[in-house]
Image 1 (cartoon, rainbow, N blue to C red):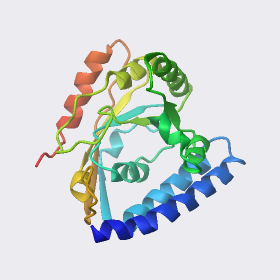
Image 2 (image 1 turned 45 degrees about the vertical axis):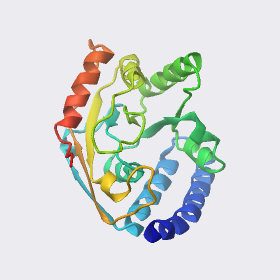
Image 3 (image 1 turned 90 degrees about the vertical axis):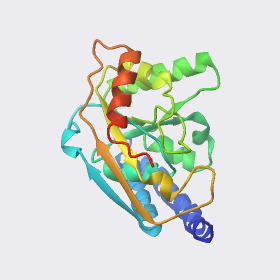
Length: 231
C-alpha cells in the first residue's frame, strides 16, 4: 500500500505536466501526433517508475498501414500505459465521455484525437457510435476494451455489443490483443502496486466485411482467450 501511495505522489503532478504539454502542442498540431507523443512519454515513465517491464509479441501481425480497431482484455490501470508503448502506430482511444470532462486531462485527450463515447442513454450512444465509426473509416486507428471494465479475477468478462457494432459500421479490420500480468501488478479496487511484467500478444487481424457483430464477438473472444493466462 505504501508503494502505491508513493507512486500516486509521482503520478498526479506528472500527469498534469504531460497533459499541459499535450494541450499546448495540440494548438500547433492538428494531426494528434504531438498529443500521442506526449501520451507515449507519459506511459514510458509511468511504467519505469512503477518498475514494470513490458514484453510484446505478434507485432509482425499488425498491419502497417490503414485504420484498424485494436480490441483486447482489460486487466488493470497499467493496460493503458502498456498499450501506449506497445502499439507502434498512431492511434486514438475510444473512452467514456466522462473522462473528457476532467480538467486539463480531458483537454489533452481531445487534442490527441481521442474519441468520446457517451453511454448516458441509447440515443446519445448511437450518435457517438456513428461519429466514432466515421472517424475510423476516415483513417483513425483506435483501441477499445470490449469488456467495458477491468476484470476482478483475470477471466474474460462478457463483451459489450457496442464495440462490435462500431467495427461493423467502420468496416475496418479488428486486431485482437491479449494482456497478461497487469492484474497481479495493480488489482482492481485495491490500493496495491507490485513490480512485475506485463505481456501483450497481438493476433492476426480479423476482417469485418460480411460479418455480423455476433460473429465478430465470438472470433475476437476466441483470439483473446487463446493467449490468456488465468491463475
